[in-house]
Length: 582
Image (cartoon, rainbow, N blue to C red; front, side, top):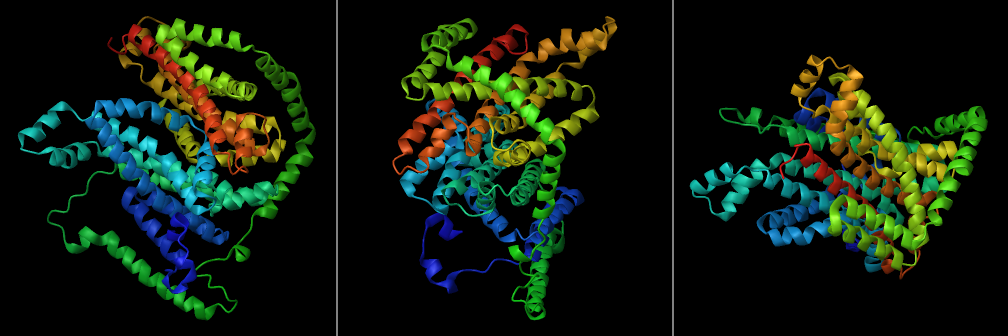
């Protein structure tokens, strides 16, 4: 890990200085113990299944490379985010200065980060690590600031009245009170690190992302699915563990014995000793040169590639005609006319449309903001590519929005369906976005259809989640009043719940736009003609850092223009409905 993050070759040149990795049995035992401590049997069993699956399928080494990558990058991002979040809380000027920077950073595509870092630091694990740290820091800044802002003035006053100085007030009052939001920030940092660790394989970062990239380049879908499943399992496990940590109540150890206070640590020490003994015994028992109790080599593990390849062949043999008809219809009758319509849009007409919409929604200020974003894109050499990006994102957002609002509305009707659908959304949202390309490539090959279906799947998540949250947030008193008035269930949904939840739903559409833009750019890997393709080309250009940055800003400004319009409208609508004070 030190070599990966610093390119320090001394450790490689002196093998005696390299610490051996822990046997898979010990890591598995540690994950099980940690899962049980955080959230009981369910999480412990899932941790065991994840680790055993990774080991048995021969993916242990790349998985540990990816995991070590995350476990080193995440604390650095956490520290930087915590520092900038506290600084923003202390200084309004710093917050105002950081806000636009964070907005741009959170809407910039992954590829733009890695190209700029590659130009500055070269190719290798260290470049991927730097890009990962930078990419994962903004959510930590925002959630730290959010948590500190939520601390009630009474708590702050109580701390001051107790004689706390500024340092004590911060670390003994504010941060402990904001603990939950800060730990949710840690969860977001871990997820962002894992997502970027996969993308960083484009500039030489080792691990599961590298294996996935090689498999997709060779169109070995079965092998790519193996790596993708491992990445997804690790993502879900880390997500569940970090969220369990965030929601776990503080343990108190008064009047407990030494064993009761430290039982999980003692269990892990015991697991380490037992694992080392088994690994030592295994070195004598296995005569093939591989110790299966230490690590299952890739070429000795179970491979699901033949099974997945057979499944892909069966799908193609069985549904080839239907898939071809759907693909041809979508491209010829829907996508190409829509693309042509976008490319025919004159620059002046686009300005009038965008700025006019901004003026109607938010007045002159909003019109100038979205006009400035559009002007930047128009003055760049990639106006037509930006329109292609916009057309693909628009199609994805329309379909995702329809699916998300309908599924969210159905799920919000009772508590059980709400929990099930939100659980599915949580799981899907933990998957690194790159993974979504694998199943669609199985079905539609390297086409725009594959990219857009991946966009739809990925972008439906926020639309569904925000619809559920918006409808569930309608006060129960209004439900009772509607029932007493004799309205039907459909009347209550369309005349009461939807109007009140609509501002919240629109914020979900806003997130859907951001998700769609991210996925469209990632889809450039399988051959689109949008801004993402030019960012990909910049990867092979030693002087492509500036180009990648400008292209990334073009993508970010598309997202920020939509964000400005939707947020301004949603805020005004909430005030009109009395959901917020003027």
